[in-house]
Every structure is written in structure tokens, then in C-alpha cells.
Image (cartoon, helix red, strand yellow):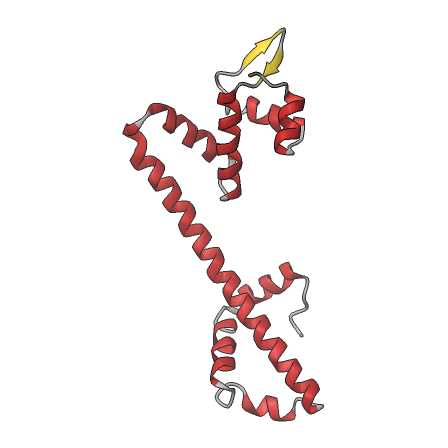
Length: 165
């Protein structure tokens, strides 16, 4: 079965311009055209499923194109493809670690202000930091505050929060 660009756009909830861009970038090398009109076969539909999956993993279009070229070359490129995914995996793990530190800091701050609200002030809290904190809260405090000040400021800036909270 063949599909028009409009049909594929609806199927994948992608703008037509995105599909044209993918084609221009060489992601559909065997796409048929009838009178200059793109016709998507099951081959392009399957390629689009792979593209969307790889995009969701954070790969950029140039890396997706490279992956697809390697896949077309066959088994000789298994090692290259594995390296590509290992590099992406490391990047995701690093981002997750940064996000975990941010989450720990936010959890600590929530606990801090819940306690301050309950007690009506911060007097006792300020004396507890860091060694007098409950063990689970101390772990959050240490994790959330182990970043360099510039990294913390960057996280706060990206989250829309003021550093002075």
C-alpha cells in the first residue's frame, strides 16, 4: 500500500514539513515519487517508526541518518551501531544524574519549608544544617548541594527558580 504525505502526517501526528525535512536529509532514500509527489510505502513507514524511536532516545537527525546508513550496510556495522547507542546511553545517564541531584535538592527544600511552616520559623532548622538533619534528609541535602555553585545556579535558572530561595 502507498500513502500520501498527508496520510503519513496524520498517522504519525507530524507536520508535513517534518516529513519533507526527513526526506531532504536522506532518511527515505528509496522513496517513490509519482509526478514529483512523494509516495510512502511500508518501507518508509517502518523507517519513520525507527526515526521516531531514535528521536525519542535523543539522537539528532545526523546520527539517525548515520545509523540508517550503517543498518543498510549490514552486519559489518554492528560495532559502530552499538558504539552510537552506548554514547547516547552515557549521555542519558549523565542527564539523569544531574536531574536526580536537582530532585534531591528540591525534595530537601520542600522538607525544609514544610518544617519551617510547621514550626513558624527557621531558627531550629538553620542550626540543624547539615549534621543535625534527619539521616534521609541529610542524604538529600548532601546530594542536592554537591554540585558546584555554577551548576546549581544553571539548574535554578533553567527551572525558573531564583537562587535565593
